Length: 149
Image (cartoon, rainbow, N blue to C red; front, top):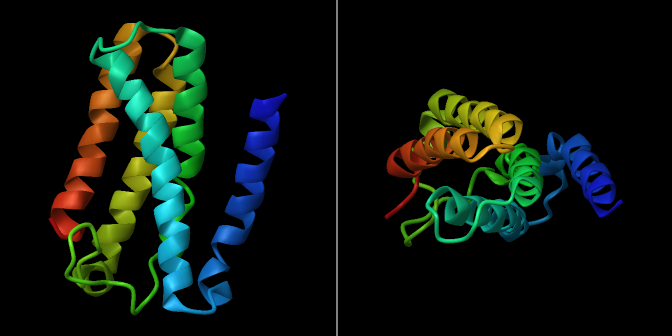
């Protein structure tokens, strides 16, 4: 039941994500929104990484649940990338998010695709390891290109 409620909430958030940019009163609101989405996604991705790397025992049910959350959350943060929210501080988006938006959007789509594969393959340790590595690679590629180190 909690998973169903989370899924409903995530889908409701997704339904509002596309027009969300128009809903942000201030650029800081957009930043909070995307940071929150990435925080939730990162927390659950970290749990998967611990299993994939053998730091915690593999649990198929927990892996599947965490992977599904990652896949749902991967759809949300991009509405929070609105003009005026780049910076030079560590972890902030570089200005090229807006000047090379097509590449940035392609990276977001790739993350969503790999996250869906992660959710589909998290039921076995081998499947988790393979899909986790691919998904992590999409995160790294975007960070390398669009995030201040």
